[in-house]
Image (cartoon, rainbow, N blue to C red; front, side, top):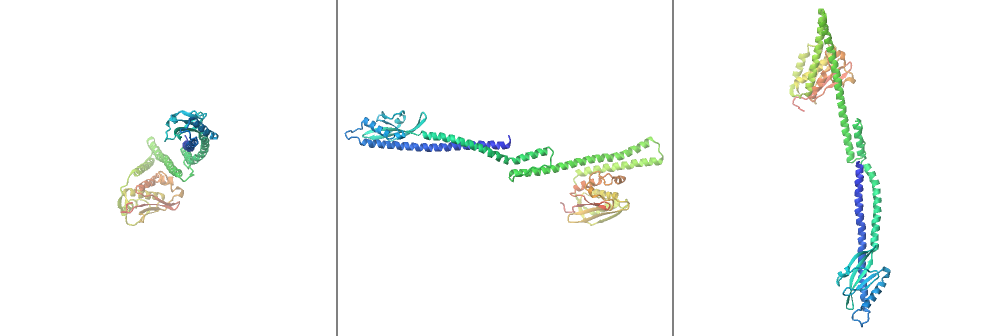
Length: 469
């Protein structure tokens, strides 16, 4: 069952119970008040009749010391005629509670009569066919006689009014329930509209429309729920985009890796087949062997780089305080004189928090890339400087540079700006990917500044020695 229908159903149930109980209480309260008033009037009328009877008995001639029965009947008849306009019904009984006079139509049992005493006035409400009466009883002291006077007062109008009240209230209740259904249908529809919008949003997102957002139409708890849902949807969309990018990157990686394997393996297989199937002269044999060796070394370098990336991605660096002089001395020994380049090393003394072998690997890869991007004899600058944020290393070359639209791609595995140039120098496009992974575990990142034809500058910042983050 829909939530709006549940709200509507429970509202109708509550309204019906509330109107039913309140209507019953109200009509019954009016009825009891009216009936109590009629009973009071009947009791007053009974007292008045008793007083009138006693007054009439005083006019009896003095020759009677005791009020005769025929006089009782005569007085009772006069009292009854005096109330004909009100439909008065009387019954007079003697001391033994034997009936002396009864109005026509006064056909009551003796139950109330038997309960009546000199000091007790009694009454009851009885139903005779479709009519209701207040039956009262009282004693009359007249000329040394104790008589019992009973009176019937018709109160059928009170019961008729109660029946009419219940009937009218039922009609009013039905009208109010019908109006309440219409109003609550509108209210429940408005209250549950945010829920319907959220439901639609979840269906759209389940169908793959991750950019869809639920419309916020209120500022209450449901509005907050809508905002939270949209925030969750945005986070989900970003995660999905990230996963899609990672999947795409893995697919590109596998394609590039297969391609990188295919090229040297084709050369190795081709030249190896030539050596085993043909008798070549010394020069061709040396050339074939050289191709096999060169491509084999490239495969070896690529496999080692891939292994380094995998290890770096899982490794937790053991950071230690390292003097930067040790790093720059190592770089000078490794590159100066071994490459046909003009190297310039310029650094400020200091210390960094790092895993020295990993940072050496980063700088070696950056210098190696700078050499590959430069012509023989090109200038390569390696610098180190202290700043407020830490100690910054930088490697600058003045080679081919990197177009701006490709700068965000160069840290991906196997990506090469100039593939023919990189392969000619045994490059596989893995160096920068390895640098990024190593810098991640040092809480740093690679900074790239480059312009096509002008050269590039790669840098990163490490925490200074003694300033652990």
